[in-house]
Length: 441
Ligand SMILES: [Zn+2]
Image 1 (tube, rainbow, N blue to C red):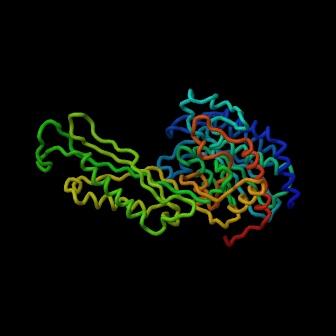
Image 2 (cartoon, rainbow, N blue to C red):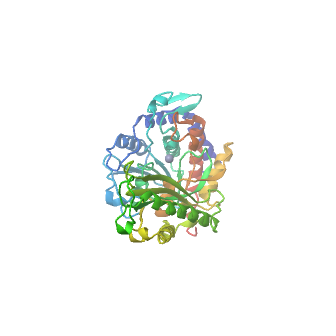
Image 3 (tube, rainbow, N blue to C red):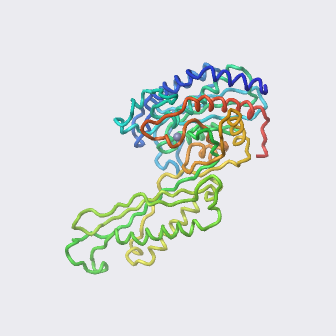
């Protein structure tokens, strides 16, 4: 092992640039558009996972390809309505180490966001095209490019034979773009390692932290009545305007955010502060009627410091409910007809210490390739947070392409990034899996 093995694996990957692009092109050709609803039928997810399972098995991995049951992902705030996984198997392919070293996982999601509006694309989003040393196609950077790079790295390591002391697992999941149910299913299935790299498009930076999300919706009920007819007091049966009764609650959420952001724990070196954004406001039924109902929904991004030991932000939920209840307490109608707070899917915040080997090793390896790699964070959630907070696997993101190209028309990834990420992953595995497990972490 040592520098010779690292040079050899990098030379092997360099010689297979075209193969990496071919694999990415194959992955892009599978339609794995994220499901819009829990009961939407599967597309090409199984075929894609079987392609990877076949390749990794041929390279020597012990392959586990399974369809989770809805109950496998039940019981957390992340997936309030557990979906079925028919046609959407999860994959964990483990290359057994020779023994005594730390285990490492590469993880990626195979689902992609819808390619609409297709007519705006320069070329077919599901038919990869290479122009100017960039691969174009839906999922090129988010994140089939990352998957192609991790598979290339694992195969190159396998061709060298027996270089890793610890196990290396390649794990690909579904349902990241919709709910996170695929990553959660993998965690619940027991897929874990001493650390993981999720190959989201970081532009070869190492993201060591992400924010979590809460989705509160508040519903206020009024009482309908003719808008053109003077109304009696509501106590005498008069109409009540649900939209107007909502307004003090919107103010209360604004005041809550101002107070919340003044507190300790709102500074993070690689994440933005927590933020509460009013995203939807719906009220009223008819142009000549007092609105009977008004709902408001917020997107609330919170920092790792705001979550509890179990990974979820129950304390923050309680504070929001208290702020709404307190604002409602000064309105006699709302006291008798309290606003209802409902919670959508929650995803956890997570972070890995900056000095961890899983942060420092890929950073160092990427810099040795001449890349200007830095430590950063992602303000939005990703599957790595599930592995970190719920699976006991400290996870960072490191991958090809830029997040700014994700979900865009003409999504693309540089071929050089694919090659450099594959090399960095392979070198990181050689270094990380060589060392014995440090249980003191
Ligand atoms: Zn992604």
